[in-house]
Amino acid sequence: MPDFLHESRCHAHGARLVAGVDEVGRGPLAGPVVAAAVILFPCAIPPGLDDSKALGAGTRARLADEVARAGHVGLGAASVEEIDRLNILQATFLAMCRAVAALPVAPDHLLIDGNRVPARLPCRAEAVVKGDSLSLSISAASVVAKVRRDDDMLSLAQHYPGYGWATNMGYGTAEHLMGLKSHGATPHHRRSFRPVHNMLRQGNSAAQSVK
Image 1: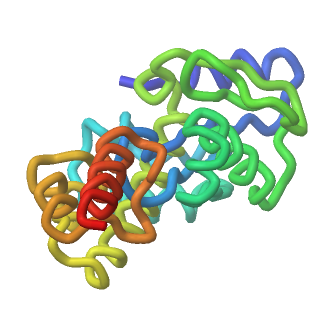
Image 2 (image 1 turned 180 degrees about the horizontal axis):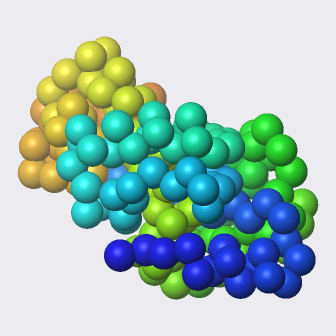
């Protein structure tokens, strides 16, 4: 289970406000990538925080509300257009920077999930591999980001039925791939991702052959 040791170490070295940062949505074929930055306080940490992937939807929603009440939260996203233009890694970094900028108070130190740190951050930062299962602040960020992105995909699913987004959240499941084959790509599909790119290329080739 995650703990507060990383944050406590940063506090011991003079950091006053430590934020955990994580993203959700690097792998899907559709929808934005969403990041969250969360500052927790030792006296008000919601119990039960963990990597969002280890929690059910109801638990995530409850914890996201508790985190918002108990700490400081910033959210950021990168659009499908930005993902296709920049690549998914740089778009993820952009979403993280936006999440940090959206915090209502300026952090002194950032704990970033993963093995790389975005450029142009406003304060000191360190990467924490598997941080969402080690640091409570990063766990909180993973939960908040997951809830927001799932809400976004549920909303998109109402406008674009046939892809299974209400359950697969844009990931490349069999239902989603079948929807792509049957209905084609929507404006919310990532055209730089191979299954979407290949489907569009095949469609263009078929159109050219008809001509």
